[in-house]
Image 1 (tube, rainbow, N blue to C red):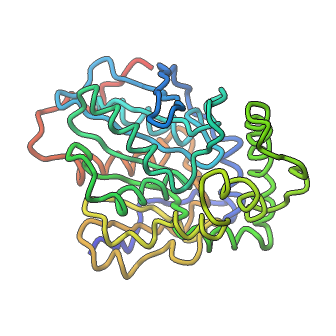
Image 2: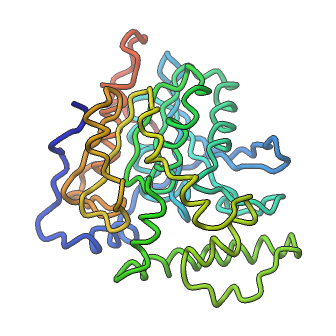
Length: 340
């Protein structure tokens, strides 16, 4: 049953096709910014991660926390992260948006990057949150962060702390080889070009701290497989790009997910193909909810002016109605807005 045959998302009239729905929100959708409290988390491997906290003035009695994982070259100030923070703070749930290595506007110590496979980093963030006394933790992710969240919920199911109650993801690139291959064709090359620019800048920054990382010919790299073969795979211990892509694909671990999990993957997402629409798996599993809106693009979901961004309200609804323990203490009114 958790294959959801219909979706409440309705694209506004005249909002264009998949590419417009993807590109327009990325550049023009604005959300009220959040004044995060930034914390540096020292990691067990001798590096650090930067955590951006958005706590409530009046948190729920159950000490609840939403942990948000962003996209490949995203960050905690992207519209999708800010929308979730606003949505959950309105119902008195604290939020923690973590920055991947190299994306927190500061350099890291080690010549490492956060990858689709870095479930151990998400575990470090969760363990740190548990040390703060949170009793209920919910996970959310977008694009690469969506794949990472699903990979954690599936592959690491046996080690997940009981305080982690479930998750919800949007535009999950869970079949990494197929998604990478799709971006090699047609208009996918535009997106690839867009992402490769900050990835090259990241490697230059790593080289400045670690001159042993050879960046000769970096400007000649024109594709994800070339970049990942040359840098990501050797730096992070994979044989090559294809080994990295296959190892880190969450689609092969979906049947191991034991906690309630919502996957929102639009049918017209230009990044998604292959096993990114696991209808058969969702129809067999009681805890995996697959919602496939006809429209939305990649993390776009153009929403009517003055309305809450649809994925944010949908994730909040899923958390409150499906994930949240029903025996928790009463919460404060949902419409009592927090001071941002």
